[in-house]
Length: 394
Image (tube, rainbow, N blue to C red; front, side, top):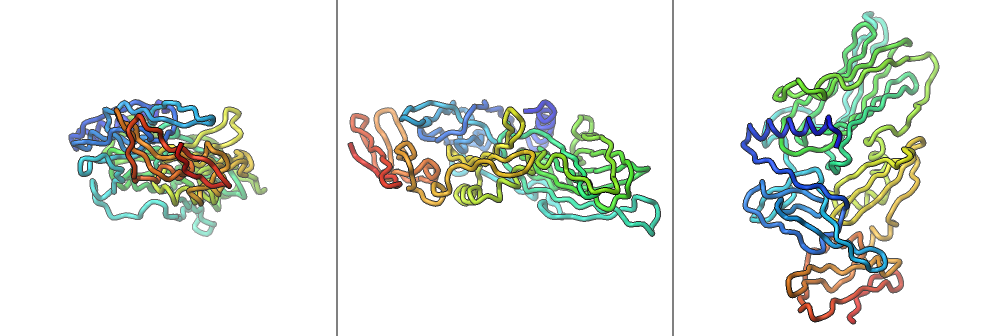
């Protein structure tokens, strides 16, 4: 987690904790998205008992280890990874909770994910063409904490300044963007007209400034501000400063995919991502770069099921998609025995398990246990026969 973002997150949580008397908790991070085979502890007595991980909502005191089946039948124990989002204690169980802005600060304003356009006169002469700012702010995206980096990408294309920003902020915000101009200095100013709350997520801001006269400009971007949050720490001041030049000639964008938001937008358009999000609407999102910094890797994950989209950073073309679309569309599709798994939960002296083999993508959807077995008995097994997962009894 970037140091700047950590300061922002800690400061916001401190303010909310004092205002609402919320007890803070700091669960341990872990290293992999996993399958919740062993059944993590989900009982609770208060909201503060619950945290959100890649294994789902669990008790914060649970040192949760799950079993991940690798190729060759090897069982590896891994820890559950903390992801962005919030859980609440509902009927004694930790359940996913998506907070709405009006639960803390009722407001009347435009919602996020709407396009907005404003005009300013950059020349001081009303007879001249007025510059236009148009922008779009994404919905609150629940990405992993490891993906919550800040990034601003500025480019010029066809005499238009394009700004893409990855913005980590509170999940009940309502972010607006405005443009001011003074003496060839362009100021982009972000504001939060919503509230502040306990959960964090990512917003992806896209803005364009069109109709600028040819010449050199200073571009300044000021980070999102909130009336109830002090302005003393760095993200709430100037977060970008640089010189741009508008030429008579059309210029091409030098970095087509410079931010996470751009990469996520491309990934969401794939059939694979569409099918995965139909299965798991609350899937976590992880966005990273390869070490060579030539590709974006977008992972949609839910309790061990993962859809991966790899995108060329320079061209925006999709290099790789996994798994195959057949795995996503059919719960029983397989190509190898290792693709098939049977849901089970291990207890001190007995097993709970299902009787239907599923592929690794659909396994987290299974929520019914139908058979119990003494540990002395053998578990059923799975085979891939004619591209179909089949349950066999040894």
